[in-house]
Amino acid sequence: FGEIKDFQILEKDLRDHARVEYMGFVPHDRLIEEYRRAHVALDVMARNPERELAFTTRTVEYMWCGLPVIYQDFSELSPLIKEYEAGWVVNPADEAQVEAAIEEALTCPHEVRRRGENAQQLVRERLVWDKAIEPLDTFCRNPRRIEPLPMPMWSWSPKSIPKLLREVRHNLRRGGLSAVLYYSRRYIKNQWEILRR
Image 1 (cartoon, rainbow, N blue to C red):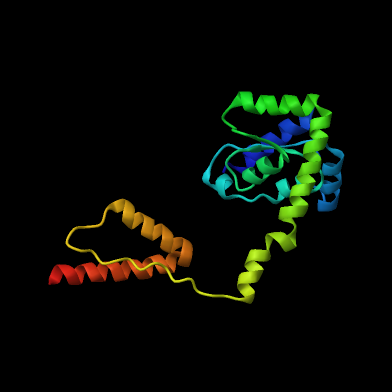
Image 2 (image 1 turned 120 degrees about the vertical axis):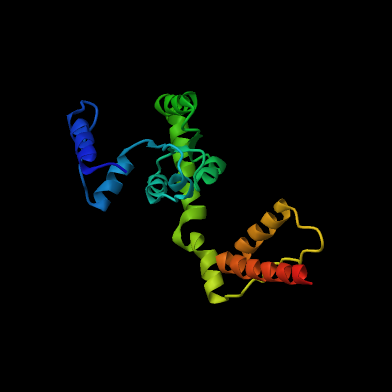
């Protein structure tokens, strides 16, 4: 992730840059006020496993403040931003796409305004606490175990690898890692019994 000295060099470069207003660390409420005075948020990152799984609070805050966001096309929020037209969803490796989104954001204030309103609508309809947490709340109030599909015994010919992988994926989705381990042990034990006969 880099060393502290790398951050210190970057910090100095930013402080010294003529087009950067470097604010350092600021209280959260001041940060929100700064967001509200802005027009567009640029939140494009290179693809990596952490970014693919991230559900970034800062991006939700940008949209809550009415900022349309220029955002990568592979993250958890990407489909929602695209569906609501709450910004521009781009492939970070495609410079032309990123440039086109920035160009439109700089030259089309009506589009920025429209997408900013859409961003706030997205947050209101899908990302506020009571809407986002509802599925977990419902489950916690009425927990139930979903039975994983049993892994059928091996006949005299081995299963195809794709079929086994489908069953593993199904059990992982339905019961988590413990279900996969449980049914894997059961499957291996059954196969061993068949082979011993």
